[in-house]
Image (cartoon, rainbow, N blue to C red):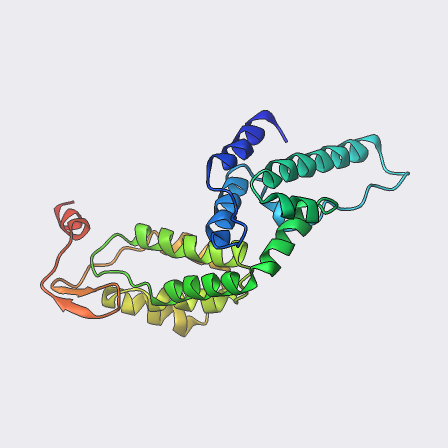
Length: 229
């Protein structure tokens, strides 16, 4: 862990501590995950520190392992400062991964409900006709990433892609049907990268609101800009 990563980890302590009853676990957990992802240390809560290298490994492997162990230890010390004393004592002999895994297990009901609600947001989010495609895709990608990375949600790339296709307004119908009809098989990230550059002519006077209901007589600012360009 370098100095920049350490300072970012310490910044985690500026937020609310985990309460004894775990009522704020989800917000506490997501804030921790956000910090770890920001400094490229998200693996700390996704995998064990691992076993030391074999004796016949080169010196660099041993150095890398010691650096990894030190990173885990520093992170755990900081995270422990943000949880109740009783839990610190309970998890004293566990590494960072096991500690977070135990906390998730002890708050399993909250964890499952939060995942369910986020999944519902992913499935129900709709893009308004004439609004900015990139902004919509960024939102969908963020929700999907949190589901998979933070909430251990499993879905196929095809299912995630179809959810995004269903979220698009009528002006994208030809593209949607074309993609489905071709039977393409892309990874979700590749699909999202390609889709963001797609340009279509919005259907004026017809809009999809946040619930997927079509409304009349609305052209938003983004659509107006497209016509002016």
